[in-house]
Image (tube, rainbow, N blue to C red; front, side):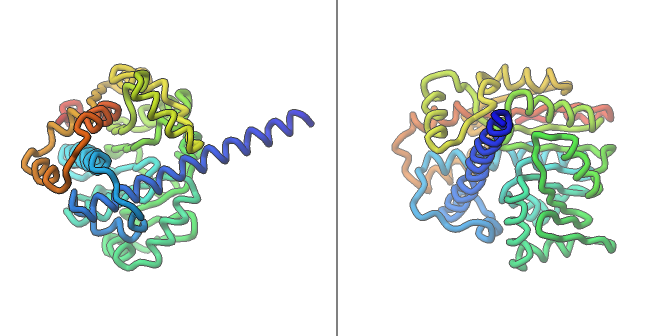
Length: 329
């Protein structure tokens, strides 16, 4: 009886923690929509997924999202170029991300694009797609063949697929992706933005190990926190905890080295990691100058500290010698 009560409490605690993580999807989407509305970058699709922010976002937040979107996008496009789009992308914890539509607009779609997230988030995304022609039309335009599946928890067309799954259970994840025609022999790019940090180190290690052992030719891009043991990192953790949001995997976010080490220990052949201040300095400087003119940034030091506490890490394994190990900024 006591054990059953303990299990129920633990499950309730897990549900609450998962709910807080689901809330971060909404936060990120609202921040992106606000930055787009100010002119940081163009994304005509985000408006169909999320409301406009009730209040202005701070300029350092907008610049941070600008660097995140452009940094991740740069590596994705480098992978697409190396594979000549003869590949598949698996976006883990994709939330309301609009990358599929933006790649289609640029004629850069991979052979197939998969998104995975909690079933509740997937149901909301599918509802938006079904009810908004600017979202559904591009999916239909890129679709060929007979089998087009759409229900409340999954969508599967020939080029785009959304799967509701829990990333903490990779066997369940693999089974669902294979049902939607995941091809393990195709070069595969896996993308995770602020996802692994919400899993325990063991759970994220299992996911990374599964990906490295499943795909012979693959790249993994991870965007998340770093340098979290200093005072600024501690304040970030406390702020999230106040919102019942626990960073279960924060111990791997000690340093750039600990981030690379996790990838190398779990089956990846090469790994690199740089903080977002470095990424920001590598972005096309004419555009950086343009966005810096959009809003006055009072807190330069705060911006730099914030950027030094996020990073992009990427890893590869490349049995076909496509040159994935050479991808860098």
